Amino acid sequence: MTEFADLAYPDIGALLKDERRTVLLLPLGATEPHGPHAPLKTDTLISLGICERAAERLEDDRDIRALVLPPLPYGVTRYGAAFPGGVSISEATLRALVVEISRSLAAQGFPRIVLVNSHFEPEQVRTLREAVAESEGVVRLLDLTRRQNAKRLTDEFRSGSCHAGRYETSLVLADEPALVRRQRMESLESKMIDMPAAIAAGQTDFMAMGMDRAYCGAPAEATAEEGERTFETLTELLIDLVREVAAC
Image (cartoon, rainbow, N blue to C red; front, side, top):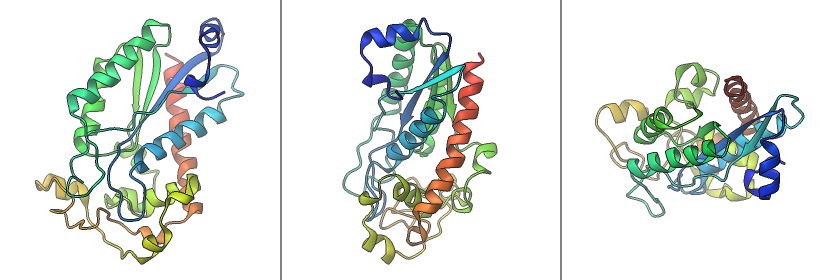
């Protein structure tokens, strides 16, 4: 049992009487273009995959129970506006959703929540950090943009050239391979663009950054095997944070 919303209300009530501490995992992502080869839900899929793996690993833990909340599939995503399919919400909406969800759960006796985000537009990350500070209960963010987390991930991720590239495409191949358009993927040239540097220089859309097909990095080099290895690292990072939250 890893999905919070799969339970009936008496099951939820029973959790409050259990000696195991419950930590709820909230996957966050976006609905936005990820190259011509990867699904719009790439970021949400990755966050959900991390949460599900962590919850499964903790199923037999004596002290901690992790349950996965329904994901938030919409985020602050404006950089891909030149391409069809992007659905963006405002910073205020995202902040309100996270804060109100956490307050609702804390009021019911579930104050321990970990946000798991795989959508890295700066406005999204900043808003989630603000929401953590504003939320009630013990709410933390698995922030993969922090140096101590990023250093454990792939070279492409650390390069900042990883939107729908090898890093993300490998994760989708590991979790839902049927969603990757392989012929398109294999035809894509490597396009190394330092997105953080471009954003710092004032470029706030994919086209201005030179991402004329809504991707950067090397998607043609993606493999399910790399995706599984990366999921393992991401799962370890999340479990470490869950244990920290459970101790509070």
